[in-house]
Length: 249
Image (cartoon, rainbow, N blue to C red; front, side, top):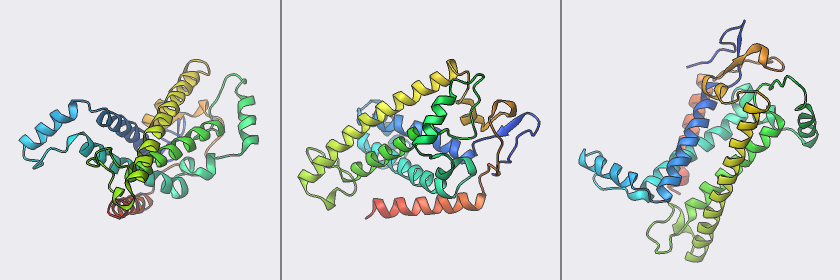
């Protein structure tokens, strides 16, 4: 599947390739699932019963079993997004949207201009949110790998490499990083609301469809915004291989 640079050269312009959109919404879903399993919601016990009853699994996984399964998926997505931030489409690359303090100040000053027109991809202020989320997700997943439960029964796959006290420290960091993730998600939702209702810029729809009306975008693409199948395949294989190596280290 390959996205073209313009869905309609007269009316719409593509700003996000399909892999960026899949990453975004799959990450949202997996974070919700991981939160639910960590809070021991009953839906996972019901899912276990359904899976075992249909012969898809011999034993129930339990909440933490599902938690680890979702963690594998989230780790895969995180590694892929970092790869795609270097080798991916134009608007997905870190070099395109990660700017210095001067660019952030300039962007904030320009917010008073009306009508507000978003640029292509992430703006310099939004880039700070993206980087913060990636850092916190990396911390969340890394600490989870080494976490040791109080009774030692529900521990991370790499917990065997650390002693009990170190594993408990990782457990504390794991819990605190999830609280930090709550805060970042809240700020992200607030920012979306500000853009939607104050600046009259819909930033949710482009993350679903990939496109914006051409006359609502500030600037024009200098390169094709598309997901090269070869690069996607390389990213998938690389990410899957690294997840396997990390999980079985």
